[in-house]
Amino acid sequence: MLHSSALRPSRRSVLALAGLGAGAGALAACGAGGEGSTAPVVVAGCYPMEYLLDRIGGEEIDIVQLAKPGADAHGIELSPKQVIEIQEAALVVQIPGLQTALDDAISSHGDENVLDVSTVVSMLSADEGHEHEHEHEHEGSEHDEAAGSGSSDEGGAEAGGDGHDHGIAGDDPHLWHDPARMADIADALAQRLGQIVPEAAETFTANAETVRTELEDLDAELAESFGAADGERTFVTSHTAFSYLADRYDLTQVGITGIDPETEPSPQRLLELEGVIAEAGVTTIFFETTASPKVAQTLADNVGVEAEELDNLATQLSEDADYPQVMRENSRKLVESWS
Image (tube, rainbow, N blue to C red; front, side):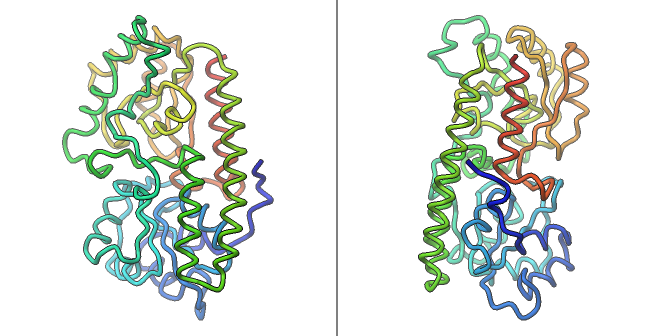
């Protein structure tokens, strides 16, 4: 099992706490460890990759986190100085489609210093991930028809039609909600970091093995927790950021919108959702901490159910709650909504 005590105090949050822009750029220019640091700089666009890098790389690397805590990680903006820093970093960890600004910075100079995680793990398509439904459970049921009427196709059209840039060839970038995929990425990071700092390669490999064991324990724990829940195990979210969670643990996610958190649902979509919520017996509408709860709260009020937060984990909202702790808390909230 993972415990918060397993985390060392590190330099990983310096840039995120300092904010983006010129100030963050100045810090990164001398490494996250401060002026005079000789450790290689590794850039992470979101908290889950930062978490893995910190656990594996430790004090051997300086981690630059691009997304501010509590902000929308999708919409980061980079200064010209930060683009240069990305070009000069020893390693940039990229989840294609998560952050257009980072993707653009990489495409402008090449990917020689980039680990594209889509080359390490399989990614769900945005369309198939909007509502993860399992035919062996739902085929032929009335709920299946109702969910289909407000399904990934409709949600995808609402969310992804105009100016939708998330995902390469329609991939869903929110892969960190699957601990098994995280473990595979950890192995790849250890291998890549070993090439950058050969004298620490064995340490990186050992750290990745520890992380894998912890993530596999977390995966088993979550599987047991979700598996003990009866019924449809359907949950409604403000946008479909939890498709990998649904895919891993055989859940049904229904998004008010698709994977773009900035999209507003149509009145028709909201009416369809009211029918799905009633049919599935949904008790809670979940909204994300980093997004406005207005639409989710309004929908919850209209159908007479509760509204509750889920942490999408794109950024770390509290230093006291790390990746496994948030995964457990999200699981607890979901399971309680089905009881």
